[in-house]
Amino acid sequence: MKKGADIAARFIAAYRHLESIGTITSNQEAAAILKCTPQVVTEILKERMNPTITVIQNFCIGYGVSFEFLFNGKKPILSPHLNPHLIPHLTTEKGNQIAAEPTEKYKKTSKDKDPITDREMIEQLKEQLRLKDEIIARDRKLLEAYKLIIESREDESGQTKRASSKGH
Image 1 (cartoon, helix red, strand yellow):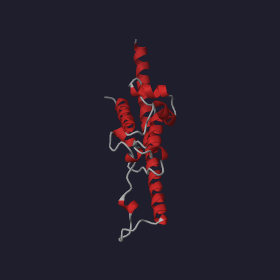
Image 2 (cartoon, helix red, strand yellow):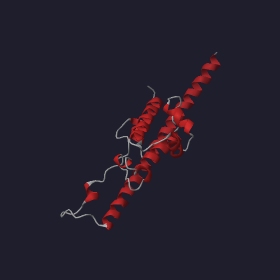
Image 3 (cartoon, one colour):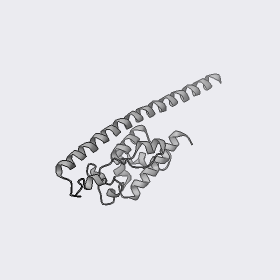
Image 4 (cartoon, one colour):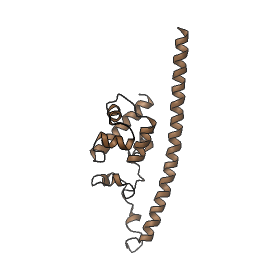
């Protein structure tokens, strides 16, 4: 299987997972988040079309799907750095099941097991946002690298086709 087909298969697997837990309820809703038409979503799901880089990027950002899962197959499907309180469309009744659970640190931090204070929560959320920004920056670099790879492969295949057509 080629890399593009692998990515498409994992895209479909992640999409079906999000449907199964109620995060995606229709192709129309998904299309709005993916910034494409419902027909494009249908074509991708029927394996008649591969998702574009833009659709993949919007899928990962809009639904919290891990770039590493889509490009390398490395689980989990969803980014373990999601905070359901910061991503409203993932905080539906079923959606809470997919977002990363708060660590014990979020629930309690003192030796006495007292609930954390608002100030501590704010500091923890700031730290989580800082980490998320680092992950987004890393994922953007990864996405740019994949774009270059795909473009170079497209250029190579175009040159190969032109060279073979000149030979005939």
